[in-house]
Length: 320
Image 1 (cartoon, helix red, strand yellow):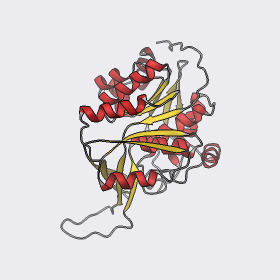
Image 2: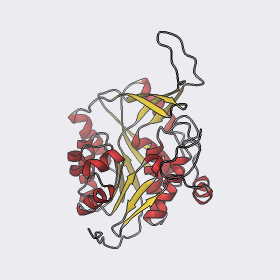
Image 3: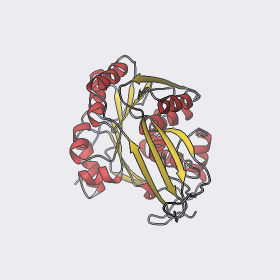
Image 4: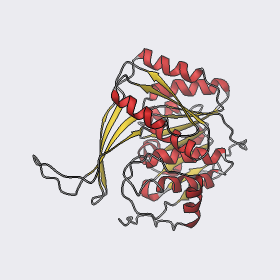
């Protein structure tokens, strides 16, 4: 199948609004063997803000992009703690929308020895009034780019519609969606980054899956491959971008950092393949510590790693 010919893309410009999930993540590194019904000592327990939208927004701000984040906020200590940490991030403005349900919370059990991670999440469904309040907040803001996560697909579709009405670009973190949900969200989306599960839901062949995204109007389609890097297309063929060979302690939040960095480098004028290379480097910088909150991320560190680090051979296991 020949590649879809997409129209020439104009430069990406702000203002940028990010809308979606905020969580409070409790991060716990666990040993390879845990004895049941006994106390197990761990190195540390950290509480940090999480959620696809929140981490992407912090990444954008850390990389020099003025960003407004719109998130639901439950009336509970978890929401207070997460928002308190976000308040210290330069270039980030947070619009917390009061909702009737609890703030999302997750416990992340990460085992470095096994290279595994278990996430236990509390995610309450927003009421219709809660979703209306999120939509109203986004509609009240001026933006040229809207980044949304697909944690709540129905809400994401309504937010994409607002951007479409204004002719704004939309960046979608598709995460791991069912085929029908992904197909519902794609119309009106400019940039989509989906994990392997969502990509396979469209087609077992990732190249054909990306082709399907273009056929639904997506300008830039990315399939993230974890330790395999990413595949990217802007309509002129698919390019495989390998992951960087770095030590791995914890992968929590790396994908969310990837999404924020990808958008930041497109806004800085990089071509899609170059932006994906930088996004892979930004994600790699989160892998050497517990949790993916990018509190120390800088553009200089990303550029230095992207230019200097060796690339991982597909299928190679990272060394501890």
